[in-house]
Image (tube, rainbow, N blue to C red; front, top):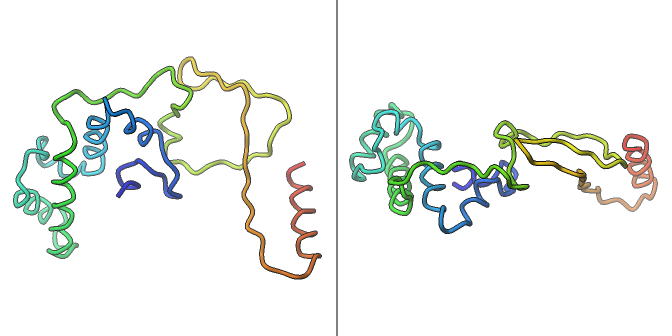
Length: 166
């Protein structure tokens, strides 16, 4: 559910929205925005979908899914939607992302997979999203090594890494 709402990426790592949600003064508005995006089809049918009763939500979802999902699954989706809406605050305007925070990311990078580049020994200064400057970038590469008693396997892996990352 957290992945669908945009709090976690496909790998389960927290996204910017997760950190915004941790701010208790904005958490209900952040959740409301996530619900609007996740259930965009439902909000396209009724812009005040968060005010619908659970049975009304089920009926709208039946129409939207057009027989592609079972009635039991639609009931569960409707219950989840209703429960999320009970916590969320749709009365306040949608929250704007922070502008001068080093934690903010460009919207197009939000769900994009990480790019693989070789690390540089020189500090990099980049301007991202307004006035944010990054003085250096770090790349962390995790390697899952196979189980082997043959030292040559590990030597080959590390030799290849050295050649490609140097």
